Length: 175
Image (cartoon, rainbow, N blue to C red; front, side):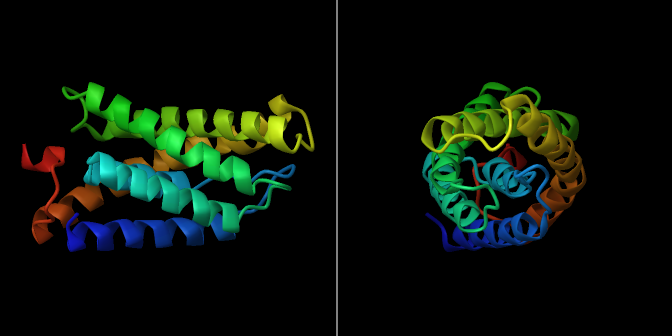
């Protein structure tokens, strides 16, 4: 694993934890803005070991900053599953993955997967403070919109930075 790649992943995780910390909670659940940074890291450095490292770090950091009662374990469960699903979809869509729109749509799908896995794990581990539908609509739906918009804005910026710095990735940038 390249040191430059680790630095990029660490910066994205740091930005994600700040976003996750400052995001207000609605009905006991925060829209998870940290996911956008995790997805951006996966898109920029699509290597399985980098994806898993980023997923574990993101899960631990979001567990530390969660506002959900008992949400630590569900966060740790949710992030690796979500990262693998997102990574698999990203790899499967070779033809479309250069598009900003497709990356934003993948981010929306990944956020929906994350919210579903998180709420399901929380339901079975600690119980939910409100109904699944209310928590999904109050926390996950806004996160889907915010993360998709964030990725739509940040992805082109990140691509131009990566091209200028010659970041050593196996990303679509080099192909």
